[in-house]
Length: 210
Ligand SMILES: N[C@@H](CCC(=O)N[C@@H](CS)C(=O)NCC(=O)O)C(=O)O
Image (tube, rainbow, N blue to C red; front, side, top):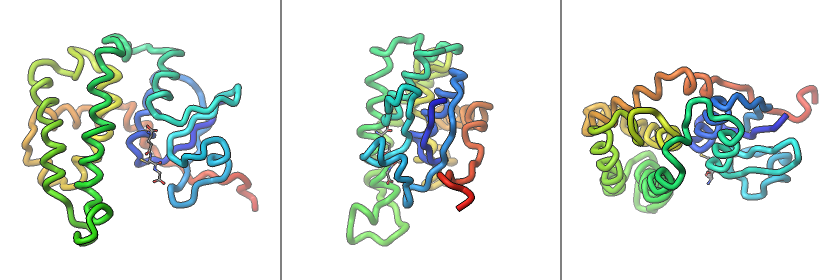
């Protein structure tokens, strides 16, 4: 059975878990702590990020998007790939590129700016992230989902990052400046698949009896 190293609150791991879930592929879930990564994971993927999927033939997938494609390549019962990868990729790349850059600088301002107090946010980066969100807002004003009338890989690959953004300043997000995007996100947070992949797991231990 494939093994997935995962961390519950990581948006990259969330999207990988959702694709695995929808595909029906069975796997062993190994919950890790980012501050105490098991050597079994680092031995197979030295870059030390989650998610990591170790396949039955010992191949290792250590990019969340590759895990999504691998799972959907096995089985895509809801047609997540239907819009076509070429159509979806530019949008998906924006979220893990520009948007995530600004999200991290907005949320973890003190990590990036020595003058900033721990716990404070950087509103200039919030605004730059909002420029990306504005495009989604306009798109979702025309269609129910990012690629049309049905949810697709694009929605599932993107919404965990918008969730992370929304949680930085929940009251501000709930105002809401992006009402359509807000409702779209709430819809995904309420799905069975999301609730399932957010179930809690104890931290994995190689030798629990020791
Ligand atoms: N490009 C990777 C990024 C994964 C990533 O950055 N995950 C974060 C957690 S959300 C991580 O593992 N960071 C390492 C750390 O915090 O030590 C992917 O898509 O899987």
